[in-house]
Amino acid sequence: MATIYHGDFNDSYPDSIAKKKKIADWPVVYVLNNDNEAYIGETVNMQNRSEQHLKNPDKQRMTKVHVITDDTFNKSVILDLESFLIKYAASDKKYDLLNGNGGVSNHNYYDKKHYEDQFDEIWEQLRKQKLARHTIDEIEASDLFKYSPYKALSPDQYRAMTSILVGLYMEELQGRSSCTVVQGGPGTGKTVLAVYLLKLLADNNTNGQFDIEMDEAPEEFIEKHENLSATFKGMKIGMVVPMQALRKTISGVADHIRNLDKSMILKPTDVVNEKYDLLIVDEAHRLHRRKALSQYPKHDSINEALDLGKDGTELDWILACSKHQILFYDRNQSVRPSDIQPQDIEALLKSSSEERVVSQYSLETQFRCKAGDAYIRYIGRILSNDPPESRESFEGYDFRLFNDPNDLITSIKALEDKEKLCRTVAGYAWEWKSKKDKKAYDFDFNGKQYRWNSTLLDWVNSDKAIDEIGCIHTIQGYDLNYAGVIIGPDVYYDKVTREIKISQKDYKDSLGRTVDGDMELLRRQILNVYYTLLTRGIKGTYVYACDDALREYLSKYIP
Image 1 (cartoon, rainbow, N blue to C red):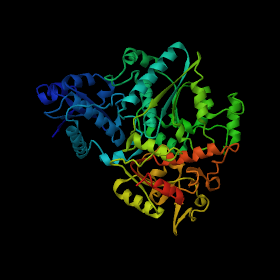
Image 2 (image 1 turned 180 degrees about the vertical axis):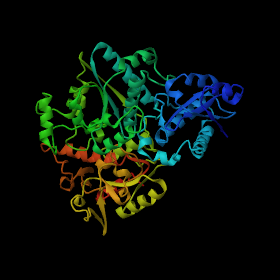
Image 3 (image 1 turned 135 degrees about the horizontal axis):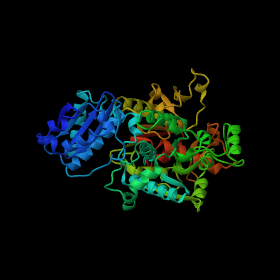
Image 4 (image 1 turned 30 degrees about the vertical axis):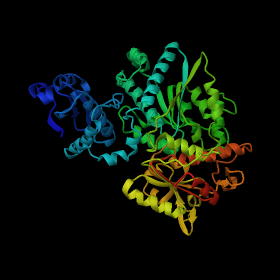
């Protein structure tokens, strides 16, 4: 069991530990703190490291030191423990964390599981000693943890991150603009990587250096590391989040992270007020075009101000108001006709020129769903007219079909008590009566009545959420432990043609109407709604379909 040694952090500290072998020259992890700030580090020579920190203006403010050590610790273990503590301390809110996010990484080593079991115990020791507030479970359920920039990147995220930065550096040297499209399906960590990059660049603006784990860095990145930092220092950066609910959540996260600020989290209309060196765009598939909008005058006035003509899109605004862009995009999560279309991105990818270099990367690793990439692909096949040949099973993932929507809702409510973050969601196939009349109900399932989400902003974490049914606009971009998905009468199965079809009259989203009579576009976007809903669950997904024939079809593929 690890031991934690406590002391006063001052000029006499290095000498006081000189003869304490398991502290002075042994692999350890340490925490420096004062009343408001903390710094977490690792070292194999605490005496030398503490002397270095005592010369650093930021670390000089620290008054206490806590050294975590164990006879069996080695370099791999302390790197892993350091990453673990930074990741959780950043979301605990006990201290303002001085650490950058570049040093948080995954480390594989012998008997890793044995040590990881100890990490939870070490965290509990820190809580008992008032160095942390919340339990691991409480932290993992928080938005601050889910969207934290202190996450270890997967290998493909890391490769994308380093390649994007090197490309950005090269184009900046040449005086050219650039646009990078990062494509990834549900749960591949697009938002996490977007926030990670924002934090990395914001820290560089303050400190003039990237604190990045170099063990896995490509040679090209290592060679240019110092020049990258110098080139990017002083960049005006922002992060555009088109969806209001997710934007509010990310703004709240930014407000609790050192060197970030909620003012850096923008809606598309904000970008026209200033010129940016770099705009990072999350959920870029939800940027609007000039179709099926609720408000045309404002859109038109911005197009006019930017000299974009009548058909300019929010993507065009971003390109016009920034030198560099990083777009995180998934064509299968476009859910309204007002969203920019795949052909808009395809045209952008083909537009690379001497003036603006356009590149793309893909994220493949699945973070959200315990069933992995195979489940995401399976859902896509089920909702297509090229379904799987047979039912697939996903070990450890709770995937089931219900014959009664009330049973589904009851099961989700029961899971909420144990698992937390369990919610029922549905396609937009019911009138939103309760929006105008708070006493009205929107759903009636065999005499049992329910309401749509009473709030759009942060509905997932609201007090009433477990008793309500969330729409697509409350849940896109969010994770749930369990998702109960009700497929409405807007989707049905035609037994004659053996196809999944849509019912336009049963689709109730007032902004989801057809554009120029394009029924195929409407079909694709309604099915994208359900694809998005069915890929929210981390531990499980429960499904009910209103159409009998569709339910029979789904029973071939869902237990």
